[in-house]
Image (spheres, helix red, strand yellow):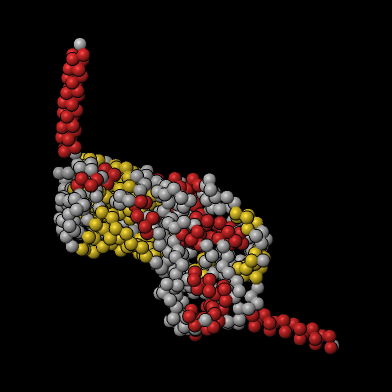
Length: 262
Length: 353
């Protein structure tokens, strides 16, 4: 009987600690998972692009939520909407929040949804505050390529394309609402776009149908010859998306998750 | 002997000079007769005579003919909007649009104008877009300059150097998918003297669509890249929807009128054999360029190309405008209509039933 009580107590304690972890602002202890070392094959095949070895790293289980980001701006007033420097976040920064530190009561659902409309600079600052960093493109792509674990679909590309084909939902669903992959990561595709540390290392523009000679010649006609896999439409989209970004852009379907070196 | 040699060399030299001069004169005369190419027609140093905002219209409407005849700065702003719309009565599709409709807004400018172009991407867009206007002389037709993330906008300027009816489209990768989702429209560049006056002008644009479900299968149908690659279209449409321009939505005209159609073909894959059932095109500006053909039954419109056709209407009735690759018309939706009202004209056509 005493043992039983202790057991129940332990379970309750365990549940409470999980609950605490999910509370607004308590981002500490957010689960991370290890992605084993691997090789990242760049999307473009040119004479100069080589497969990139990627060391094992840790990455957040799910994207940073509004609740977590509220905790951040409360402790870092410089990153509040009313105070942020325009150089570091454009006018759409956190525009879906009611005030500097709160969502409208009607938007309570969004607390557990990924924070979006945050700039690269803000995502960087948050990551640093957490003692973490943003994943590189190579790391993100490696993690994103993980096989789905809890749902069946024939092709990851089709799954991603189906997401592209739907307009953005009126209310962004919460984190962990799509699928789980082999590394234990949720929503790598199908919920939001995510910032990467070196998003703009993929050179600038996205027309690149042979007008330039750099590696961005991927997006039409002649240029597409260099693409590793022409049917990887989803890859096209991610690279096109990243190529269009600037560090201070705040976009309503663009959020982030943090990574850490091992 | 040496003198003689020298003399003959001089003579040959003179002869060559004379010949080449006359050749030069001849070639000058020839180019003088031809329409001047590119910048020859436009004085890039001439000052612009004011700023206007372009009138933009959704198909089948066309902006009014331009009333100015000196080059101006023309402001154009287009917004890319991704939205679910009907592709058929009971079928929906997630279209990607220039301005909220398929095809995109019709733009009308005059040769010599300086176009100040702003492309916005709606904040709730999912993906990046840009625009390649075939009327542009410059990198990617503007695509490089306009690659815009959701919620952002981009601006560039181009000088309109050549008259014609030009297609514009999105050129963000994968280009095929962006075009297949409806990202195309027309920009008309009027020649300096304008186009001859007609009674009515309309805007039609053909496009082929690829859906997971078959033609007219109910519900929201996603894009099917397999079918697109195989060029097996489920829908071939004028103005982005089955029955967009038929029945109560038919174009309206009267007996005795001259009608001009600005017809584009967005593709992504199919070439149009554009034909009016029961009417002959009096004039066809072939491929949207300056050469005019007369008395044409069916004109080819390339994917990513256009044609301006004119016809005078002699008798009342319904004119079916079709892609004469005829299964597309009767099984895939490629029919538009002009309802011609007015008195019967038995001297031209009489049924003896």
